[in-house]
Length: 113
Image (cartoon, rainbow, N blue to C red; front, side):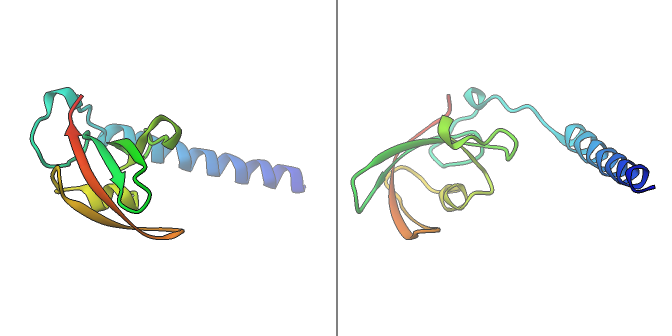
């Protein structure tokens, strides 16, 4: 009865995922970035950068893993770019290892909006 076993396996997977999501929800905290301040980059910051090689400017908000959406300019706090930015200030230059190799970015502005 392969269909039955496949259904039971799928049910077990779904129940495990539900427990995982419930745990994540119980540990979640709502943080309003506009209530934060300071010149250093931290969770919730919106950071404007310029690529030192191409002069291309970009802007990212550092968010939790679930909220991350690169197309919307929201990067996960666990991403290589965010990890390089945390604790830095306007004017600092950060080195980021990307799949395409190392990149240097200058921090132009740090906002909490």
